Length: 183
Image 1 (cartoon, rainbow, N blue to C red):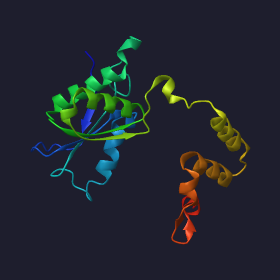
Image 2 (image 1 turned 180 degrees about the vertical axis):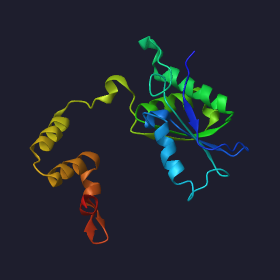
Image 3 (image 1 turned 60 degrees about the horizontal axis):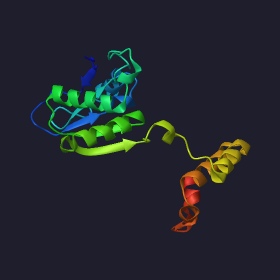
Image 4 (image 1 turned 90 degrees about the vertical axis):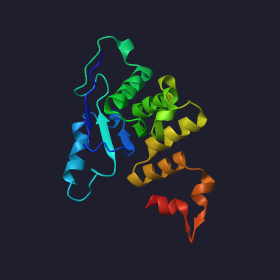
C-alpha cells in the first residue's frame, strides 16, 4: 500500500470534465496550489474544471517504498489510475512532464478510455533512450556549443540543433525565420 498525497484544486464535483496534472511537474503539490490561490479573485475554477496535482511515490509527502522495484513508470501509472478512481473521475485530461510524461503515456496505455486528452512534455522512452546517439552530428553540436563564447553563439547552436536549415532559412514576410527565433 502506498499513500499518494494529492491536492484537488476545486471542490466542485458536478460532472464537469476534469483536468489532471501529473505530479512529476511539481516536486511538492503545494506549489501547484499557490498560483491557483493567488489568482483566485481573477479566475474561478469552481464551476468550470477540476485540477489535481500529486506527489509521486517517493516524492514530497507521498509514502516512500523501500524497494527500488516499486518505482517503475508502470507502477506509478497505476498509482495515477488509483488516484483518478479515488477522486471519482471517470475521464481526465492528462498532462505529464519528463518522467511524468512517461507515466502519463503508460496511464493512457493501461486505460485509454479514461483519457480525454494527453499532453506529453519533454518525455523519453526512459533508460538509455534518454541519451542522444553519439554520432558525428552530435559530437559536432557538442563542440560548437563548447566553443560558443557568448549567449548569442549558444543560441545559434541551439537553433541549429532544434530546427532544420530549411525551416530556419525560410522567410516569414521579409525576415528569415532564424532572425525571428533568434530575437
